[in-house]
Length: 188
Length: 188
Image (cartoon, rainbow over all chains, first blue to last red; front, side, top):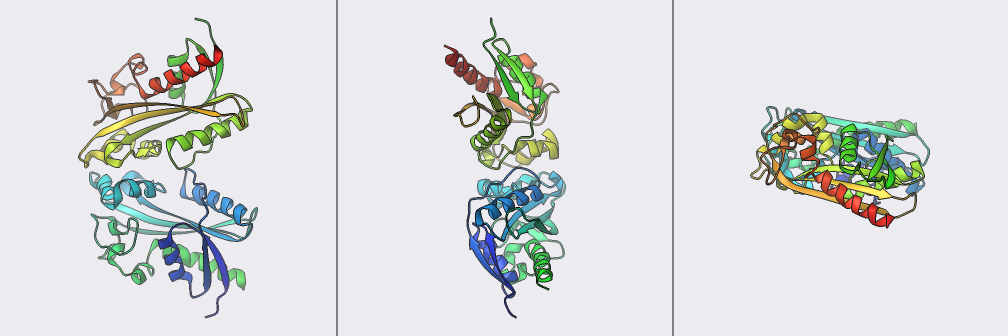
């Protein structure tokens, strides 16, 4: 297939970059830059809108940003966008332990992309959500909290899947498909 | 005693306002306004610096802001400044339950005031930290997560103390004493 478009993905996370390249790379050239973008406290949508706005003002052109979250049903969606702080502080095992005393281990993994054509232009959000369970850590592939998230209907955690398996079902895949559809419709 | 100074405390939390009036009210007139200030993700100091900067730009004059946190030793200081989101989502009982599967229930309650004379002026931070334990909820006085925090050396949680008892030992008291000393030294 021909490359439709080059996209600047602002992230400092090489794993997220690799995932997005894997998922969208056959149709889009994914470039990358790591700017230090402000992240606010609030809903995921608010976080992504602010990041996208800030990135567009730095880049002065089209830009893609992303935020990932893990929401526990027992905690009404938290740690949500704050999951990265908990991951850094207590690791995947601690993230499981946090919810271990609650009745339900149901969780949602979420990814929200923000895309804009430039400063002052509309910001488009593309959200992918996958239902699953939080489990004691299993597996060593993947990154972040992949070892404790087992999507419903699967026997494996993200970290027990190959990258290809994960990237064909994940929350990031679901969001990236919406982003791809939007970008392709813009080109027609 | 004579009132030294009038201070504008930007907060939407009437309980925090009452505490600060109780602690500083004999020397300072505490006025209040509730502006919607941005809160970033980051360390408490970063959160307070940004809030204070934003408040000074709105008020165009001297302003006091505050952020409160509860840090679990088992979680290396988290939920920290994100504690309010967890409190809203799971309540004090859930905040205890989060840490119940960890070995230690040690915690620190923290309060950081930010004070500046106006936009572009230096921002002064005053931090109070109190060591204690997170316990299953006890008591009905106080607010927020007061029912699950028992300071070391005390047999009662904050919520089992009277307001006067809490305001003579709390993390907010410790921070307010530093703020008071600074403001009084400025007047001499």
